[in-house]
Image (cartoon, rainbow, N blue to C red; front, side, top):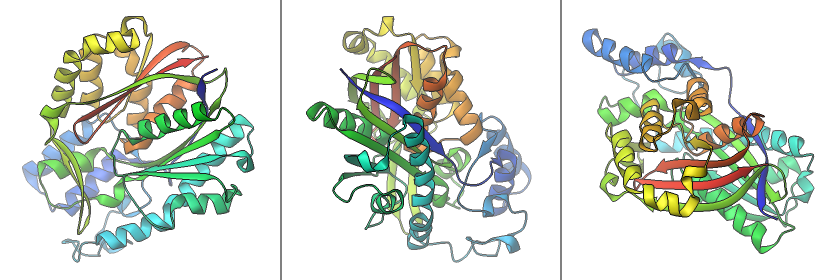
Length: 359
């Protein structure tokens, strides 16, 4: 019997913030006028995103005098330090993750006291003692639970967490592994007006997801996985810790690089996954153009991106949590049965794939 994702719980902070309101904040923060305001408006309208969530209220404020996290001046000076942002992460991440975990456990009718392993995934915040310990305290998870933390791997990190969970269950079939991704991407807003920040600020939102992995005949059975590095994109996506939050390198060439890289790997995908027989694909919603380019690289119909586009539209890119939001929608969609290939991307340029069978 294979290990399976038997349930996925989701959570987002606060009410959804319209993309137009976030665009207004960015115009104010970047002190744009005239043509640059129109460029930013166009980018936000074409993003495929209608709403995002944030643990910060400032993105929906109309005046700097109303800010609660950023300084109350047009220069946003002094700009919040990495320390200040991590203080918010420490205060908010566990509560958001807890909502997702309770949802996942309730769906599976599993008690927290029966969990054997806890895997925390995040690339937008770190603290020790960590979020996983706070989850143990809040949920009554045994103090003997085996804990793992996967930090700073980027948008594909949930794939790494789920692969670890699969290997733990294979090693001990009685294991019940909880994989929790919590990403507070909006903490890392950067005010310098350049291509990297312009793209990142237009895409990312906050969210958490929890997946319960155990031996089961139901759910999303984990069949196989593959990791590849597309070296030609090494400098086009990167993530580092700066003095004023985490800083992203995010090139506009990523969609086309993924398209080219996947086309080169078609034979490998066919040999590894018998790809021509796979009915469904779950693509990490890193952006609208990424979804389109990956779909076209595989020669698939636009219908395969239905759930990924809806996650992007309603939540934006939530880094590693995003693929779990897509898989949750596919898990709940009764019209989807059989093989699913999930694909995620991140710094490197790293391509992660996992083959599931929905039963």
